[in-house]
Image 1: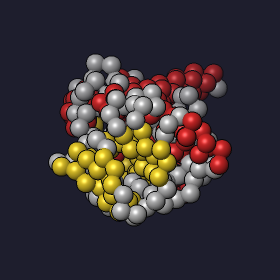
Image 2 (image 1 turned 180 degrees about the vertical axis):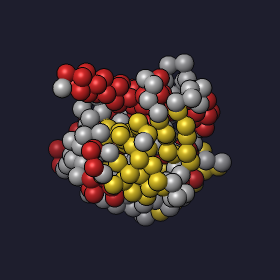
Image 3 (image 1 turned 135 degrees about the horizontal axis):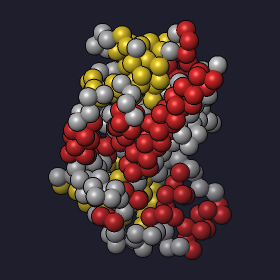
Length: 302
């Protein structure tokens, strides 16, 4: 019986594994090795790691974990989680492993869908990004485009004005702004283009221009886009784990979900930055240690 199985090897999962392992718990971290930030050249706003490549961050994190004999790593995909008697769980992986665990940390992150624009994947992570806090500094004071197909557009464009005064917003043919919102954009000198985008053009991942259905071409040296995030995993519903209206797992500050023994951390609980996910993973690991200590004291009293 393993004390803790952590599912997901990003900053949240590795932090949870590190704290739990240092708490003398036997920990297995299972990672599918498909990080969402794989397209990103550098990670930012993480103290002592600003500018680090994502693959280097993961490699260093894994090295930190494997210094402890209490922690092991399996590269695989979790296929199912079944709740067993006495609040334990049976985890089955794609590689055929069946692991019994007392506690599980869900740190699988999310998958994202980019706007329906031809060729956008060629620029995403190089000159088009989704997080102003992560990449705004690198794009500051440039002529930028915001490609937004959802109501997130208003929130993101307000943030982007912090980094540039030359911003154009396009909805790629969608009608997402009402009359008052359009007036607000006009007052703030933000042009709105509601036509469908035909194509993006650039060189080596660096955006240069956007072509619209009307034939108009505008020149931009980079931009941001809104994405659709999805964390739907079959075992979330099967286990009865509560989610909010947006579909993210509900967890408290210590990572507790509504199911005893199941904790959650990172973007599976909502969009966040690298350092926030790492902090949530730390708290989930600490929550497991605190809960096990409390149970040990309670069992002695009985």
